[in-house]
Length: 213
Image (cartoon, rainbow, N blue to C red; front, side):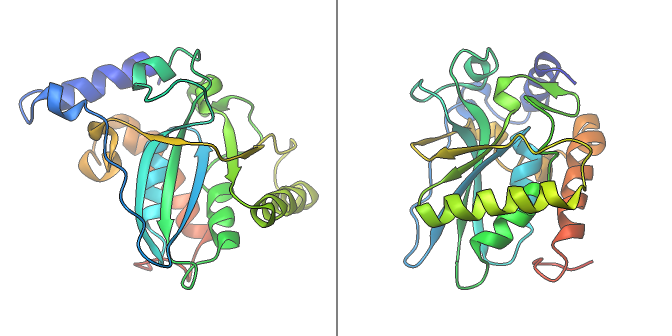
């Protein structure tokens, strides 16, 4: 599904249930709790990424948004033009005593195809690129090690093209994007594209899930 179709579906789902102007306002970022750490990833449409990471024990909250670009407080429509430099991203608030950064990396690489350049399934564009944002030298080393491991495993026919980028800033997306999978589980795009990604992540993270199947 292209971005225009997703926008139309999203807007249609809002009509009759809540005010469009209110729901299109940008979400608020939560305040990190004491001892909490943050991680930021981009792996295609943020709806599936958010829902996938929400499944993990030790993850308190996941926010859909935009990162990696140069425009402040961008909108979904602006990011979709590929003129802001941003990628659809998620920011994860987690307890490192319960789940490690290495585990988050495992979930990230399991929940999308890191070998397709500027594309995830039917979604194409620079804003759908794969990016792992690091905040410390240790995180950068962990990302690079994970990429080497995936490439060596030959799990994919191609090489990993995930960008390894120093984290600068994360902008939350509009309110109607938050918890999108949970709110619209029967939407065709969610059923055919998003939820299969979530299931891939769940399968790879058995033993680390809030609710094991």
